[in-house]
Image 1 (cartoon, rainbow, N blue to C red):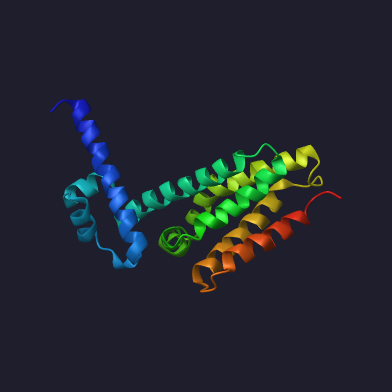
Image 2 (tube, rainbow, N blue to C red):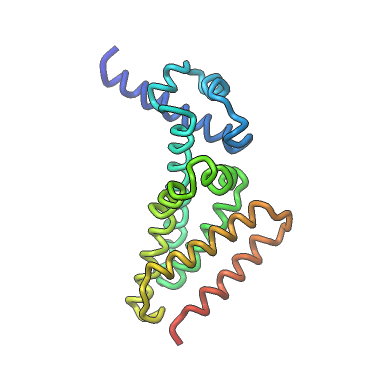
Length: 196
């Protein structure tokens, strides 16, 4: 088999492992999914899995990283749909809450992510994706005078922490109005930050 065909096959195997692992982790949770179940669902051997990933935790890390990138892209796409920087911020924050309200996202990103990888590694992944976009949006608003001059790093962490906490709460509340009420509350919170 030519090396390009082998490379394509390896990449397809990796994509299949990620897709099936994501589905299983989202449906059952990390602890309830075994490697045997993953390889069966993926139609590959355990050796093929270990060719791509060192362990179940390594596979989960890859699934979580891809998911966080997707959520970050969803937020950026929603925010970039408007030219106004303030609307970009509020739309992006609402898009984050909507994306994380998906039970499949909640299970991997918010519930299992910190417990499987540990708080520091989970936080670093969040920082590289959603928090980075938030930091850029806040800095643009400070530069434009929409927000008062202030250090952007603590403001980013305060808002990111508030939204992550809200997303965790949304993952556990049975209230069907919780998402819309949370977005309304977030809009009020953000409005209080604007320069007078």
